[in-house]
Image (tube, rainbow, N blue to C red; front, side, top):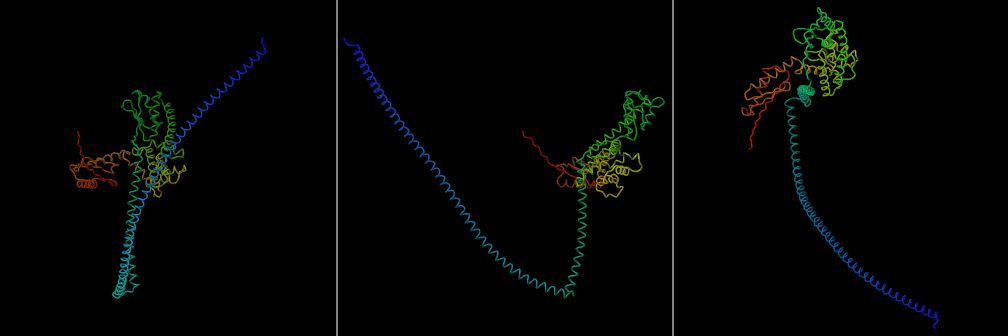
Length: 518
């Protein structure tokens, strides 16, 4: 029997042999597969290399084509630039040739002119020599005929020239003086008109009476009182007249002192509202109202100073300014008149280069004496100057208050300006009652005279009567006849009217044609 160990060994050998053969077989298979894969990778790599080579060749060809196109484009530009430069060079060469031809012509002309000039200089020298000989001959002949030496003739000639020059100098000075006077007058008129146009103030006529409304006519009896004691006490306390007539619902307070009249009006209104009217109550109410009026006057003065832009006034002067609110001159309110004069004076001063602030101060305070003329003797210029001097105002302001009515010799420019502004404010149309009436009448006369000429359709007086605008009919007049109408109207004004200054007449003639397109 076979030994099991031998069998196991044989089996193990067989198994080992088979395992070795299997391993060898697997290695062979793996090697074969790796070779195939390596061959495939090599083939694929060679194919990729070939593709990349072809793409590189194509890219190189494209870049070569592009560079060739750019090179051709740059070459074309260079050719075009060279062509343009050749053209400019040709043009410049033509221009240089033309300039050279022009210079040659100019040189020929200069040579010709020099030759002619030399001939003329030679001819002039020859004539100058002949003229000198003739003058010497003439001088000798004059000496022989006149019997005068050269020095004597020169002296007589100079004396004659001196006399003629003196006469001409005097005439020239007179001419310039007249011209300067006209310029000064025109400039002053322009300054006045400009100032008046820049400041437009409203004016209302003031009255010397005030009215107080009462609830019923029974109140009139209470105001009068038993045997008239209430009305007498009221008039004594206020210094005004109380007029009680048949006018229903109204009691009239009359007085020329507007401050007292205003105090009386306010006091009477308070008494009527209170209902207790007897002498003791009347004195209490009037006393309270007077205190209120003092405060009101101070406030009015401060407002006027602020409006006219005049600072740093004394309290007494401010109080007097407030009193001017209740003072009239020919129905013109003196405070409004003073403010207007302040603005006009300031504007005119600035126009001629003076201090506008000082000018406004002079204008505002020029009539300050009217607030105290009932308390002192003398005219309001003197009283105002004393008040201003007492309260430390500048000499220009004092002089303007003292001399604005030409009572003194005018030696201060601010006084002259204040006087001019005062006259302008007082004579402004509408400032005073009688001035307004004359103004309206003058306007009507101007327009009536102008409308009386044939061919005149309308006439308008403007610039406070200093100018008249006339509208002439284009159908009934010509340019020549319109000029004649203008001259005739001006002559008619000179013959029929009396007026200050000048009146400018302007005739307008216009033709208008209108058609409708349908």
